[in-house]
Length: 318
Picture 1 (spheres, helix red, strand yellow):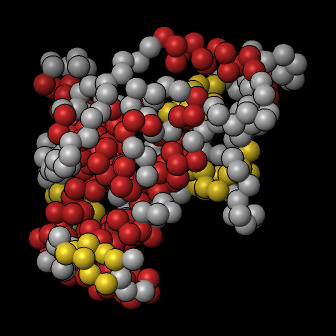
Picture 2: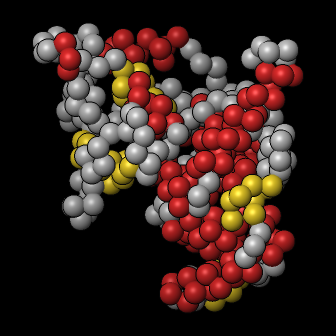
């Protein structure tokens, strides 16, 4: 194998050597912090060095080459390291965490060739699926019977539920311009292994949704917890996961809970089960947000953005 650096093809070093090079190069970013277009302050408290370490440590299977390659291409130049960190932070971490908010990045590299992203309006179909799921399923995370199920048991064991997106709606929001979408999906394709055609236009399909209680849904969208492949089985059992809690908040499920997804209409059919690639990307972003120390800042950034919009519209949300 070989590695592309500055347009050239360099002999591929061993993984330990590459990891050493990576760690050595990101040290050149010591003291630098990521920047955004926050209307109140562009500088963040998020360390570039810590963020880049988290990008590598949390990368999904197959994405390490992409991350290492991108950093080696900077040759340890502090300005290039900062730029690369800003690109990743503003064009995948913020959009994944935004849950529908427009998040102007100001740094939108254009892929070559351009990535075609299809806009799909949210339809009643998605909301009606909640009713359908309530009739047929039980929550996989808390195992509480759902309102509407037959024989749900005692009143206190019931749980109101919603359908959550794994890849959030904010990644294909109509509020984003074409360059922002191209930048976000260029990174998702390389870092998450998910081509745009697999999700755009299909974001409301069953493979991108999870049935959750309201509190689970909210904390899942905040990336307070995620689902990782069951670590107790090698190779992992297909569609079997373990809850990993990064920040225990109201609504987060119990850390270590084993969750197995099953289509109750046809247990042998895995077509509509949550796509493992989507869950891996969600888990990677959750890890990066918390390992880099960015969780608190992102929450404040999105709040600042929301407040700015309210003021810009005389107190009415756009």
